[in-house]
Length: 374
Length: 251
Ligand SMILES: Nc1ncnc2c1ncn2[C@@H]1O[C@H](COP(=O)(O)OP(=O)(O)OP(=O)(O)O)[C@@H](O)[C@H]1O
Ligand SMILES: [Mg+2]
Image (cartoon, rainbow over all chains, first blue to last red):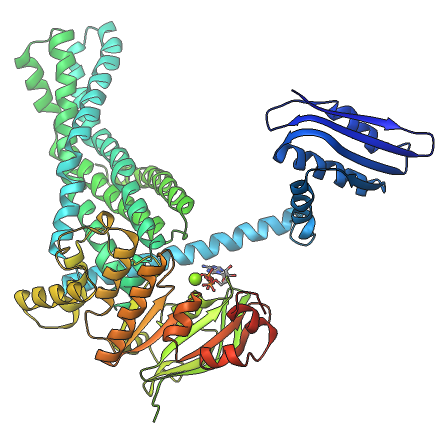
């Protein structure tokens, strides 16, 4: 059975709405739109709702009635409900018992361009102060650590070192091997034109050690470890665990931020060395098995291109990235709001900011190194 | 004779421009079970975070057993020292999720005492037994139920034999029996260890069962609109809002 509603308009400016059938959610209401349209432009003043022939009903009926009542009120139609099932009346009363809060409904205020600009500048200034304060606290925390005053659990520190170091080996191996492979492959296409395929080894060795190894390790660690710092600290914030530390007089910087920052700053340089190795292996894979270069030549050329200077520059990049990632992750985590979606936002921001700052740092370092002539 | 334990004078508390409460003054006496009541969103949790030194009041002063805690030149270091006399049970338990229950409870002991490992172990076991969680030493917070987390949080709050324990809605999310048991536990602790209790709660049965003094914060006027023994307040409600609150809107 369908839900049916029909409108009878009489001569004396009155009308009757007859409801019949099964008013259950999922049933189609016949004539729904025409009835609503008729009520929007009424040619009558009084309306009687007649519910005598309703066989079964649920919220579909009450929701539709509530809608019609709103329309009637808006268009100043007098209405009455006759012979509706008992529950319908009380549900409608309940629904209309609390008047809509006019003042609650938010209206967007028009903001002028200048006002917007001013707000952005002020926000930026506030944020900068906030970040500086954070850095100051991290610094103070390191100072306490080196004077043996910081509360750090050795177990936590070792666990963080394991997480930022050994546990990242798998993914770093895979990605860096593939990056070495891609570099060699793409490079070989060009070098083949000159018959200089053997220089693939130098290409890979130099680009991987000087910057690519560090960048790849950095990006991986930003997504893997930095994000996990933000998420862990953020959910500790939500769970009042950080408050519990503070009220116990334990600095959350010493207890939470320090071991993470320390672990990542110590592990990143090591990961970069490992990433260099994997990248060179990836290049060698292409050189030996796809380009058919002889192993002796390949190794000799690689050794020639492997300069201590480049390796150290790569490691310096890695160390800087480690600090950046740890700071972005921990900052976002410690400044996380107190709900679940804030944790998600903090995690995303930590990765975005890490990568942005890594890029900026790379530009600065490249400039510095080129000015120094290395 | 009642000795004052916490003396709060003229607190104004705000988030940025948004004033949450003003002119809040009250005194918690030693061995009181002091209840902070009020409707949802009136700032009870916020007040508790001021009382525990997490949030700074805009105005006003607090004395913690005659020593300045807020105002009168009190510094963060002073507050840290005073807070060692306090235990806090957070709404969610707030156990450190990367540590086992035993490590959670041992943490304050390791921080502030010179006990050796085996002594700490004994104390941890005792505190866990006290809250009915003996044998759960090596469980992680994620592996126990919400009610158990609350009790474990209480064990941690009690680790240093505090003189005062702050509770934020201890019985929220507990069934009536567990909530009654928690009340009994709180009373037992208070009686045997002479602890002062400051508690935020909505739970009327607990308010009447254990409260000895109280304040009611009103969200509309943003200040205290009633104070005194909750049972007395029920008998002679000073205003309509309180009568409503204490009888669940029946009067
Ligand atoms: N971090 C914050 N920033 C801004 N405003 C806040 C913040 N935390 C709470 N508030 C505001 O302060 C008011 C009081 O919040 P609070 O959490 O103290 O209420 P409550 O009395 O504990 O409520 P409930 O009984 O629901 O726990 C609320 O109106 C809330 O909007
Ligand atoms: Mg609260």
